[in-house]
Image (cartoon, rainbow, N blue to C red; front, side):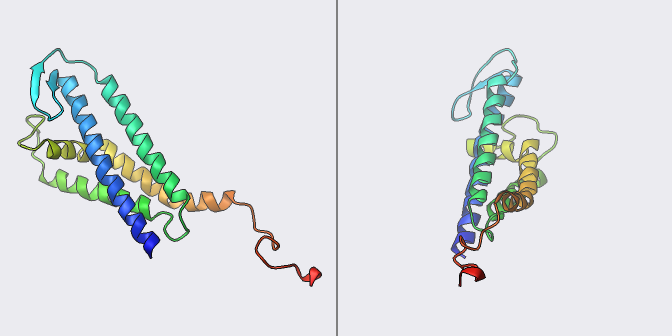
Length: 171
């Protein structure tokens, strides 16, 4: 029971951290693409020529890959019962938060900040409404059900001597 609770807590924490960091990186990518420069508090500083957000998108790609690998690594080393719990929990939290922001969003979005006074909410909204969030959730669900079969297929069968029982011929 403790392992399942720990897996759920890890899944919720990973989803929250993923959304905030991904939202910040994607928000910065949108600002570079639109020609705005924001500081760390997401306050506009200056206006420049629009540029492709190569560095921000590369950072986002590395961040997503790191979170995905970390969750797969943790799930592969957990017990059989809680093996896919953290993956499914993370995917569920991503879908729920994205659904909340998509249901309450104003379309079309007139600006990057979209009426939010908080930099934290702007990052969270940008991360939640990104298509990459749904892609991450879908990949996690697929791997949640594929990892148990992959792991059990790669383990060699247990010999009787290794299992702690002696063969009948040695009795």
